[in-house]
Length: 243
Image (cartoon, rainbow, N blue to C red; front, top):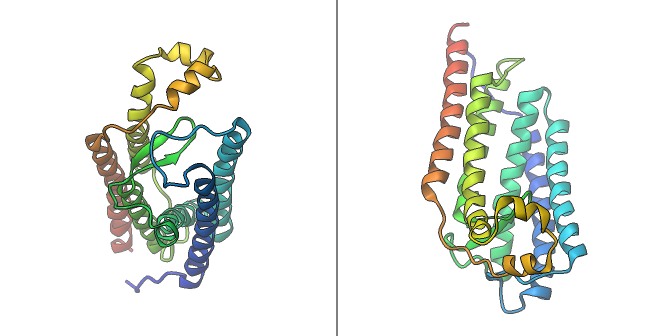
């Protein structure tokens, strides 16, 4: 069996793109914190103007589109495009925290709570959790690209996709759980759909302070994702040995 090599040049430029995007993301956050958190970022969140909140949500969506686009351009098939996308996403996420630490001295530690995402609700968790998840994404990307160099039509099979997707949903549930439970302590789910723009409801949300991160759910999701990665690797190793 011939040794397998990466297209390091392509991987390098995808990484450079992601790092540059991370700095842009960091710059935006630096400006927002200078405006709304001059004493340093902390919970509860400071209420911001509605148009800024909407702009922030669309900015996050645009970031995902840009990362997806670089994956589509870099890859040659569905699996490799997915690999470059998650690699870019992971590098972007890691360097976002690196640049925040260099510029603002934040986070104080890997256990510092952060607001991770806003779609469809706020995702919160210790900084170490997205870093761990990013490491897992880089691992999966390397595994896909590793076999893609040897097999012209490498694919992720349905059961592997299932494990990856289910594991991701479990992890996302862990990020959203504390915030969601905070809402449901005072409001029913049906009521939330009706009063999402109500001033009293928004005032209640402004009181949210993270309380407890469910590590069991996060670790369970990670285990399921790693199981999917393992199935992909073992299947492709078996295919290579049979040639």
